[in-house]
Structure formats: C-alpha cells, structure tokens
Figure 1: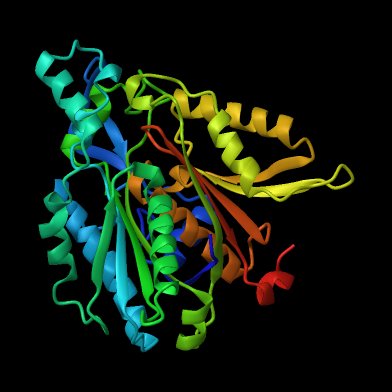
Figure 2: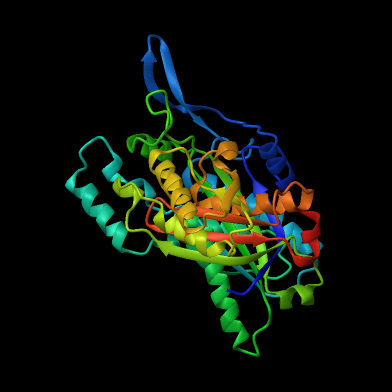
Length: 393
C-alpha cells in the first residue's frame, strides 16, 4: 500500500473527553471504572449483590442506551475532528469511513451460551453469518451526528465496516483502494479521509449478551471482559495532499494487512495464533543474526482465554519465524479503557500518535495487531515521519 499521512486525531474514553487526557491517563496507569447500577450479576454471598464493572465515558452518555448512546459518542468525536479541520482551513473533499459495532452482534455467539439455543436463534445466527449487515440501520444515527456541525466541506460517507477490532484496518484498506483509483484519474482532486471508530458495550442489551455468552468478567468468571465505550477518529491523506494542505503529519500509516483465520471465537473455537503471527512477521523488518529487533506492539488482547491462547501462540510462532525479533513493548488499551471492540484500532493509532507527539514512544514504529471475534485478523504499521525519527530511539 501507499503511505498515508495522519493529520488530525480525536479520542473520547472513560479517562477523558480529549486525546491528551485519555492518553496521559493510560500512560499513568489510571482506570476510571464503575459498577453498572442497572445490571446486577446475582448474589455470590449472603446479602451481597455483585454488579458488572464497566468503563463509561464521563457524563455525556449517562442515561442513554443502545444507538442513542452510540450517537452521543459519535457526535462528540466528529465535533472534535470538525473543529480541527476548520482550524486548519481544510478545503479539499472529505471522505468518511466508519468502524461500528455489528448491528446484530447480540444475536451472535450462541455457541458460547450455557443455555441451549432455540432453532430460531440458530437460524438467525446462520443468516447473519452469510449476509452483509444492513448499513441503513445506522443511517439515522450517523445523519444526526453530522447535522449542525460546521464542516468546512460537506463530508461524503464512503463505507461502514462491522468486523469489530479489525474494522479500522478495513477502513484503511478502503481508503488505499480509493486513493489508487483516484491516482488513475487525472481529473480526480486529492481528498482527506476521516476514519471514525465508535463502540459501546455498557448498555443493558450488550451486558446481557456478554453475560449470556460467559464473557462478562465477574467473581465466577475472572477471565471475562470489563465492557467499555469509546469514540476515536483520525484523518489520513496521501503525501501529495499533505503538500497541498501545507500541514505536518503526526505519523504515517505504512502497511496494513488483513487475513482470515480458519476459526471464530464466536463459534467457541480457540485460534492457534498462526495467522496473527504471519501478519506480524510480514509487517516486521527483516533482521540479520547479528541484530536484535525490538518491536513495539499494540494488542486487542482483552483477557479472555481464546485471546490469551491466540496471543501466546502468535508470539511462539513469531519467535520461530524471526528468532532475532523481540516484542519488547506491548500495550493493551483494554487495561485502561475496558473492552471497546470496534473502536480499538482507532484508539491504538491515536495513542501511538500521542506517544510520538509527547516524546514517550519507545520506538519509531508501532504495530497495531487486531483479532476480531470472527475470522478476520489484521496488522497495521504506524511510523514516525522521516524528519521526526531522530527524536525517538
């Protein structure tokens, strides 16, 4: 793929409603979780009710559920990007790509449930597996989020992806395909692409789904997930467009690889990590026996047993393929923000940009690895621009 320059970033998480607060809180090891008052898990001891632990955004989503909650996060995230576009006097076409939660994900994963699924539930999941999600189910929420924002140029919605933590990788590949098509058309004007990723797993419907699939963390299930919610976004464009705009990139996206695993965690199958290892192997530079390459990796490992098994397997197979490579720095955003699924890829990229901008990045390149609940696996290389690399080890 051709290099994409990252110009603007936005991040809204449980640790703050801006990039700086969220990234600084994560770096400091802060956690701002709370009990879900509306979802008790039962009575593990006499007169004691255990509640789910969640990582909600501060204040702005309180009282909202489902798509209304997503809409609040989406509006705030888009507003942050819109403000930066106006500040920089952006005057070229705007294309928007979304990574959003599958509109019917709470009907999936019945193989993980302890109760025997009905024939109707099994038929519905089989149907969802074989059909593309209906994008129109999100159109109203998206249109409301765009409404009344002072865009310098009217944005054009290009594509929505629903694969979960690999959704942002799909967005990047779609941007690259669109740019290649534009390169072949001399009449096509350079554009700026906005990649937006939003998810929330703290509504009652999602909590019931995670609990029903034995994925919600509790005293009875210590390897489950703590649900979170987040909105993250960044803008990308070609070096040609960067020159036209006269802006300095925060970082570059240099590679993006997507592959398919033979197993799906939603089918209660544990992946061996070979596909993830192969992707990371392809992203990492070739090293000789006299040098040790230390890699900085972002991982969507969320504490669940299948993810742990896959990540451990991936490191094992990577060591066999590249014995002179060491994954010396691994960051897990779920530790700071809870499980945010479809928002993960954008969160990881924004955190990397903040680390570059603030001078605490351990390396000049980072590798964003993603393992979806389904079969998709992906990896992204994010690196400093050439003129900034001297500031990083």
